[in-house]
Image 1 (tube, rainbow, N blue to C red):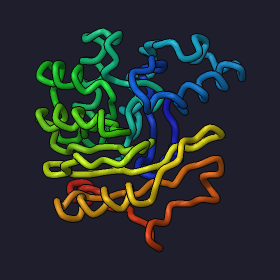
Image 2: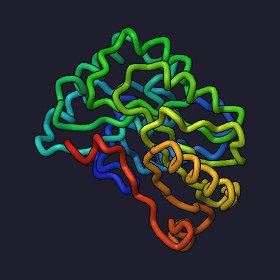
Image 3: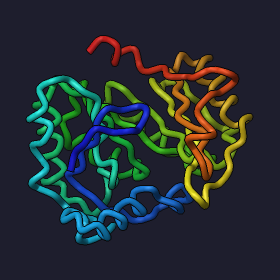
Length: 240
């Protein structure tokens, strides 16, 4: 339930919960759902329920076994603020993150309302970064919810970026990740949308990370934007 990751902006993934349900347009071609079904077909026991939400108590203490500091994407195969995750189990997950101060934990959610509601009941140590996924202009409200939390580092993943974001305000954000959808049915992302986000980030001193163009052949399409790679991270990450 944990492994080294090929995701460009993290080092490892940790999944004390797997499975999810779709809540918005960004979920349409969910990579995690496809992977879960593939792992089920391979007979991987943790995916016996395919992509139904499943709690894995046996995975709780995995980060405690890692002594060397690392960036850890929490619940890459689910949404940590899914409404069906019991609060008591969520608190146990946060307790592990609180105790593992050597690691940085990155949490992304599309359920920003639930994140905001529960954040006051959870201990947000500085090594826990809260983030939201924003795929279109209609989901920008998630950033407003994020900014109301007490997370030390607040970040946004604009992936898959499906539209332009004329109403985007990056002030108050520490980090922005942008990426296009990948896979056979990938929806296109326009360069001008990405450049607009990049420029807004530069103006607000928000670290900008361009992950990928995506598409049916994401490796071929690469991750160069205007002739270069953009790998900025929050300044806090450079000091840990």
